[in-house]
Length: 150
Image (cartoon, rainbow, N blue to C red; front, top):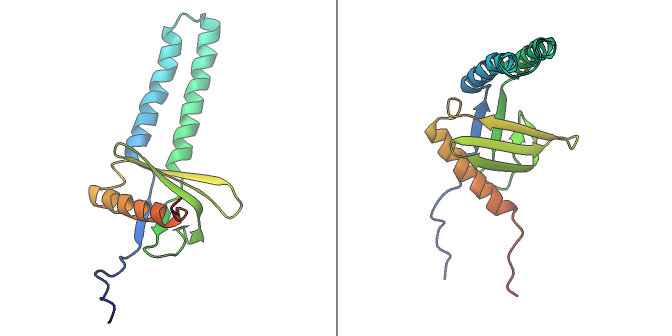
């Protein structure tokens, strides 16, 4: 008796390009503008409120610049037994978490440091979001320890 043919071929790897989100940059800009105003509108004495407002504005500008200058990244989740990679470098312990339409990817690089990326809805369209969800569930299933009956 012969074995039946496989019903489906392995799918292509999931390849996603990451870039800084315009929505996140807009939110950081808005919060950065409101933080000094909230300090000035509080009951802090003016000799404390003004320096704190300037520091809040400088910190917000630093965060905004840092986020806007992050380089684009490429995440590849293989369809088979290969290891996931980010920018062509193998990523270990890769995990995908979802918070509504936001996708958070966390992994360890070659030096063992934890790295993170977040995809906002403006950087991850619905089709790519579905592709990532399917690839992440397949990756989680393939990396889980085998189940044994008691």
